[in-house]
Image 1 (cartoon, helix red, strand yellow):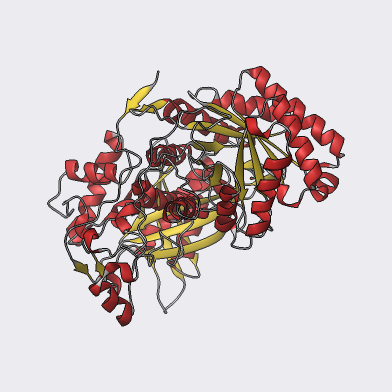
Image 2: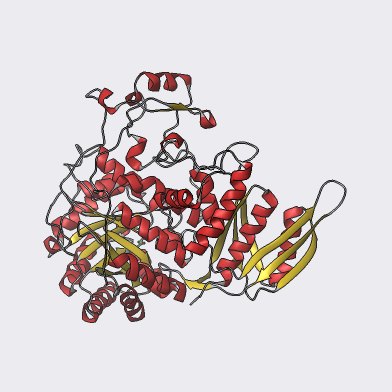
Length: 594
Ligand code: KIV
């Protein structure tokens, strides 16, 4: 049954605060000026557009409308260590729907049982939540051109109101010869048959990708694309799989495909640009200029190797550069960008560089005297986008709510909902207790603190092991020792003691003695969420199981050992680190492989 949701209009114009205020947190200067004080020459990204056209798989009624296809949960999750739990994926999918993305690629269902289950869950819930303006995201599942994959993708997405299967096969000479060991004719035959198979299962929205199109022979591309159109494909996605194309070259590729592929007027052309040379956003925009009307992106640009074109960059560049792009527009509610970015950062464990465009910590910070002076005189001197346009609220704007030790459950719940986190009552209660203990020690609990608590507490995999107690002794007098008490799923208590080269080594070894699951610790990092001695420390670890937890890689088809990240948060760095390790172990133990 479909649910109807209400939200702010996707095309709402930006809110510009009407007061001037400053905050010197992290010694940057944040300023607000009335929007009316913008002189005419200042770039303004506040364009308004007609509403989102009706969804028809192979046709967009308004030629200026560009679909946004988000693949954070598929290509993004292929980033090493970015494995997310089903609950985390569902949360991100809900947030992507708030953003208004047209298509959510929810996963690669044939990769593992866990991937399949997560796509089903998203298709059932997010794929049936219809907004008041009729918007409901298309839910898409990736599939190699194999019968098993196509069936699995369809079985997973068919629960959505608008299901899509995305089939791909490589078309470059190097991939066909060395990876597939198939001739051009065989590749065409397989592609055609698999699109027909998807159609025969009842799927009417089918995307086809000639993998490594950026290095494929043009004439062969026109031929295979023409054949899959005849077989029933509705979107043709043109991946620059290895990120080798230059912007003008990629734009040329899209233009050539539009000009030479038989039947192309009956389908949508899409871009998919990897970021190996840092050109993914530029290539995507050139693709749009050349006539692509679906753009594949990921939040924060996460993805294989150097990642994908970033959603926030592509969407905001289209908005700010509409004069260059012939008034192309999207259906995105950009005010959800910042929150979505933070959520993806927390759940994927892939931390943003401070200077990441739009969503990095420094993206709207002004440090140098000259810049601060300019900003004080006129905000347009150094800021091309109002931070509020992407939903970045300054601390003083947080809906008038300042969270501290006197705040109640309701205020905490409300702020969490505003940040995109929906908590069940029991989760909320346990988070609230942790919030209270932080608020006792910290005057003010910020959004960053809340996010850290959520990822620490609430969205971990089913907790197979919970931390009871931990005690360490360390220093210069001898070896570090640790005693750890873990509580098992059946509520039994287990105690392990170990020595180590430092307190964490000792504590992790003590945990290993209890859990008895061989793992390799691949990465360890710690960050202070806010400033000062009372800051919450978030720790992230990345582990890989030694024997188990196998998944199938979407592009290579090879099986590989999944890596699992865990996040812990707390004011005590040892406790935070121990929690992160247990979280990663729980994620790994709860993972259902192929
Ligand atoms: O990079 C790529 O080629 C892909 C396709 C499956 C779209 O991810």
